[in-house]
Structures are given as structure tokens and as C-alpha cells.
Image (cartoon, rainbow, N blue to C red):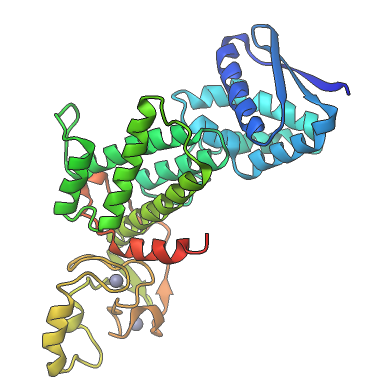
Length: 355
Ligand SMILES: [Zn+2]
Ligand SMILES: [Zn+2]
């Protein structure tokens, strides 16, 4: 059976970058059992061929890359991604798409591959570290990176996360990974034992891979880790978002949100006296619903939060809540308070069962 062939020409200065993008596409295609052959006749000129038998697989492969923002996540790891996007990834992907199915509009594709340019559009998270994990997560999902590469990059990200949260400065001598994890436990940065264990698991997998002995990590194991880490970073993201949203506009007036532990002064009707002792004991523990500690802001949708206007339960009171886009600011990591992972973990356990 003959092959379908397409010639793609890009700026010769971008030859290496083009080659690298093709290599990543080939790897991704391989995981979809699609064989993509690429050769080059001169700098910037690539000939790409696919067996006609596999044209359907090729279409599906491209579609999946499109739907999951594949080129975008590929570009995320590159230092000069705007230039690489414009001169290499965009023309290559565009030609391949036209080759695969002609009805795509070039402008749409260009927007798609460049959408990260003016800030992050594709992502779900707003916290920087959480966003970086999100990118990593999707790069694994799209098979742009191998399981080991995922573990390696995640290990780096977790190390950086801990160093930042522990207040290390650049170049400062650091502890070993597992000691950093212990320290984060002591300082209530990573409160939950299970999450600390997961951090250490990632590091163990990474170290084993360094010796090239056990680079092959089963997909099932990796997807479990990736998913649980997704929930961990989702918690991180929710937590920082909540801490940043200090006030709220209710029925036309701005109020300070009530922090965990201060509810006692705001309840309507007032808290009965005989409950006060019990309450004092309750708030020594983390919030039963969202896991924050005393003095911290509850997460969005927490059933413990009290409405600052009417004193009823905030999630279901009758006050009219106004949402403001520009009300929200993300603080730098050094300004962030310490974390508590306990609820995330309960959530992980329930959400991951049956997966
Ligand atoms: Zn709460
Ligand atoms: Zn209210």
C-alpha cells in the first residue's frame, strides 16, 4: 500500500526546532500505534509520510492533539516558545492539519497554538505552581512525555514547591528530598501523611530511573499518581484562591469574609452559651469541610463559612452575591500562608475509588 506524503517548509533557522517538534509528534503518534515517517531534504524542509491505510488513525491523532491543546502544551516547555510557535510549530501543525482534513481555518489554528502568549488561557488553575502541574499533567495525558519524564519533572516541581514554601532562597544548601518532606510535615505545610507518602513515592521512582534500571513505569501506576497529584494541586489552587479573596460584595455592599474560628461573633441567631465550650474545641481542629486552619479563609463552597451580612450559612443564605472579576488577586508564593492537605486527601480517596 502506498504512502501519503506532504512536504512542509519552515524557516531554515528553525530547522532544529522543527525537527524536535516532529520527534515529539512521532513519539505521540507511536503511542497511538500510528507510524509517522519524517525525513528532511534540506534545512527547514521536511517530508512527512503516513501509510494511506492509517489515514483514519492520523485524523484521530490530530483531532486529539487539537482538542487537548497538544502543541500548546508542547510549547510550554520551551524558552523561546513564541518564536518557535510562529516559525516552526504553527506552520508544521497547520500543514499537517490541512493534509489531514482541509476544512480547518488557518487563523483558528494559529490562535490555538499561540493562545498561551498573553497569559494562560487553556488552564483551569490560577496559582502558578498548580498551573505548572496542570501543564505537566496534560503533557503526560497527551503522551508528549514518557512516564519517566513525567516523574522526573514532577519530582523537580515538588522539590521547588517545598523549597519555596519552606522559604529557601536560591543557591541555599538544601536538605534531602525526604527530609524536606518531613520538614513540611512539621511546619504543617503538608499536613496529611498520605500526601507526604505520595511525595516520597514520586521521588523514589525518579531516583530509580536515574540508574536507568527502572525507567519503565506502568501506565496504571503513573495515571494513579498523576490523578492524585492533580487533586493535590487542585487543593493548593483552591486554597490560595480562597486566601486571596478577603472581601465579598453582598446586596450592594462590601463585607470582610469571616475567617474560620471567628464565626462565634457573627452567628445569627447567636451561638448558645452551652455550645461555646464545644465550639472552642472544634476550632482547634481543621475545618471539617474544607480543611483550613483557624484564622484562614474557607474555600469556596465550604459549609462552615458564615455570611458576614446576615450571619447565616454563607453557601445558602438569601444575600445577593456579586461576583467581580478584578476583585481577585494572586499573591506571590512567599506571601502565601502554610497549607493543610487533609481534606484534599479525603477527597482523593473518595474520588479515586472506582477509577
Ligand atoms: Zn471551611
Ligand atoms: Zn447572607
